[in-house]
Length: 325
Image (cartoon, rainbow, N blue to C red; front, side, top):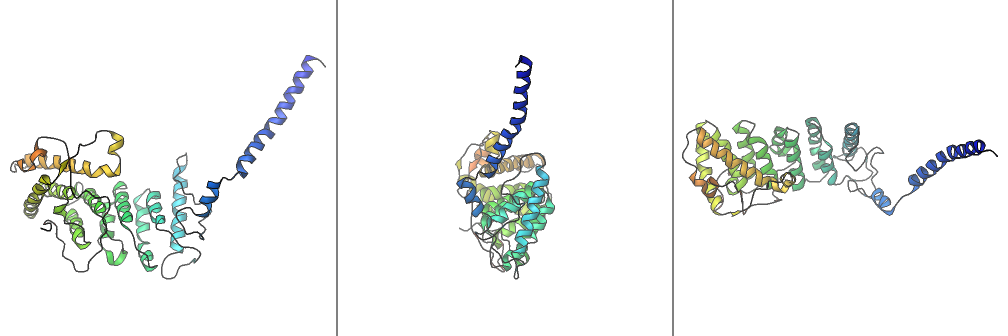
């Protein structure tokens, strides 16, 4: 056999066997199922053990190209799944929706209309005999701010009779005030503050972060009534400054992006706004801020909380400023 003939034969064998090798590799990867795979298929954390989610649903947020379309399809599939299995007369009685399904819906939503659609399903959850937890309030308030629709959160939290979705967490209350006080009329922030008393949360004046943000909103307003509220908040703010211990404001971008660091940043931001407002409007000195008047180091309130359960009390009077003695 000549050299040219031998070379041609080798090339033919390689070209015909290579696709088979690739095909065998793909098939081997396709049929292989680890123990983790079987465990996730049995219970994906969103639905009960006997519930079967739609075939197109995935438990991960897509990060590849075309992820927006896939994410919206996942959102729509999960909305349909939840809607069919909640309410007084569920359309599909196979399986039950888990609490974490709501968190997943909040995460998958990527525009205000999505959160509006999800909020319309809240009454069905209550009709099923279930209730929402503090983590739901915190996630909903956060996503409403991130998607620039905090008025939706204010509407939902403000109408417990319709939605059955309570502001039962202090971090959620802080998030709601933060989402409103800098960009919306003062009355919106005041309405949010009034919900603290209705839902049994600590008075706004007793929470350093909330108190500072509300005070900043009031002193920036030229409404005479706002100045009256500001004067009451000023006394409470002074108490909070005395009852705190220092904590340095993080400068690292990664740390500043963490949700548990946000109250520290909000507090520091509110103090800066208070100083600016006092200077611009010719208000008295900000010496009442104590160390805050000369340093940028924020302080950690003794009321720093990650979650606080509360329940709405019918006919309760909201205490915006004064904290219990």
